[in-house]
Length: 359
Image 1 (cartoon, rainbow, N blue to C red):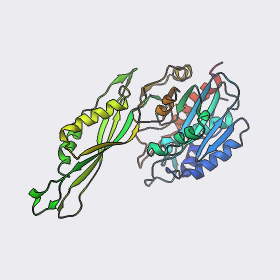
Image 2 (tube, rainbow, N blue to C red):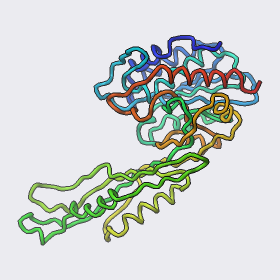
Image 3 (cartoon, one colour):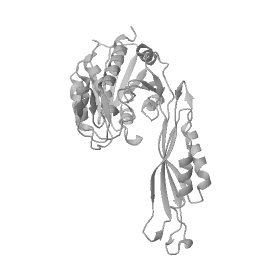
Image 4 (cartoon, rainbow, N blue to C red):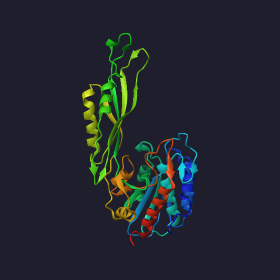
């Protein structure tokens, strides 16, 4: 077999039509579970709203194909719309196109040349404490054992290697309340944000190159809160910062960099707290299966500028990369879309890997 068993764009449209915003993946997972459990060549396990389907053929290598079932909230794009060879709708690029490719492979490749584990997991688009992949690891870690992994994140059918770390920090600045008619009797905590915001705005992104992949860091203020009443000098202000850092730094080094930038603007009573952290992952394409995926299909290789669960697999000692249909630049936007050509390129490349690897 050299072609998909169905119209992949129509299958993706069907999956887009089944809304699955984070924490609401259940109905989509029900549908996937029904399909996968009907396939005799797979053993399917459901853990909460996560599915793991595995072949058990005794092959010398096991490849993991993993993708998340959730999407960001609907933004006027909850209905799938197909025009020609383009599909619009929430999650079309991120990442129901990847799910459609994996689902078709699971249906049709009953005797792959390598054993395959298909992982459909929940709650990737929210804080890491809610991750469905972490839920699987906590309850049935053996289900995620493998030699290497491909994440179906949107990469425009190219390889996006590794990923950046993602760190959220909360800065709380202290002040002193006073009546706004007598502001000199207080200290305005909101005004104290000004030099910090100026420093963040002036930040020049590092762009390190690692194994031929150029990463671009970011440091952004994403939320500001403060003030108690219209006639009161605020005694507290809170700033949330999001930092994406390249995989040539550890989480500790990234945190130290942000704290150093903030230090000149902090006084006693101010606090800086890391509230969420997902570690970075360097490029990892030396595993024979991943190298073959690149060379056999002459795939372009670049850096993943966001964070993905390749980092979680790396922590397990499993080399992983990002490869999926869809443009990451339109993901999470109201105009999110997916083109047929990406779907078919990804399907062709992964089908070739499943049927030729090891032979």
